[in-house]
Length: 189
Ligand code: HEM
Image (cartoon, rainbow, N blue to C red; front, side):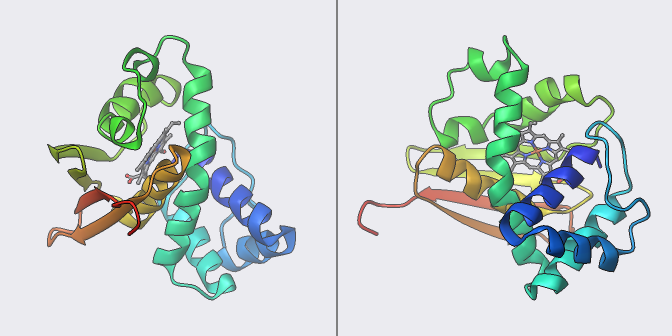
C-alpha cells in the first residue's frame, strides 16, 4: 500500500488523539521504520494493518471502528488532493455535484485518475448495481478486504457534500466482496 495511506492514518491519530498516542501506536505495532513513510513509496499491507490494529487497541475500540473513523476523517484530505492535482480531470469534466455523483465515479477516479499519480497501485473495484434518486447499490471488491475503511470514506463523502446518507453494508461469503446500499435519509428522520 502507498505511503500516503500510512501518513493519513498517522496524521488522523495525531490530530484527533495527540502525538503521544501516535508514538504509542508506532511502538506497539512493531513496524520497522519508526513510522516514517514517503507518500509515493510502496509498503507492506501488513504494516498498515498492524498500525490500525495497534491504534485500535491503544484507543480501546475495535479495528473495524478504527477503520471507520480513519476513513471518515480522511475523505476530505484525499478528495482535496484529487481535485488540486488534476486541472483537466474526469472529476471536473463530469460535474460532480453530489455524493452519489462522486460515488458512481469511484472506479474511474481510482483507475483513470489516481493511477496517474500512483502507477502500479492495487486499487479496489466498485461495481455499480443500481442507482435511483434516493438509493445507490454497488459492490466493493478487494483482495485487501477493507470494507470498514470504505464505509468511513463514504461517510466522509456524505459529510463533504453536506448530505445525510444511511450506509448499509453486507459482507459476502467470498471475503473479497462487500455489498453496499446507500440511502438518502428522509428529512426529519
Ligand atoms: C468515497 C471515496 C473513496 C472510497 C470509498 C475509497 C476506497 C478505498 C479503499 C477501501 C482503499 C484501500 C485499498 C483496498 O480496499 O483495496 C483505497 C485505496 C486507495 N485510494 Fe481510494 N477511495 C475513495 C476515494 C479516493 C480518492 C478521492 C483518492 C484520490 C487521491 C483515492 C486514492 C486511493 C489510493 C492512492 C489508494 C491506495 C492504493 C494502493 O496503495 O495500492 N481514493 N480506496
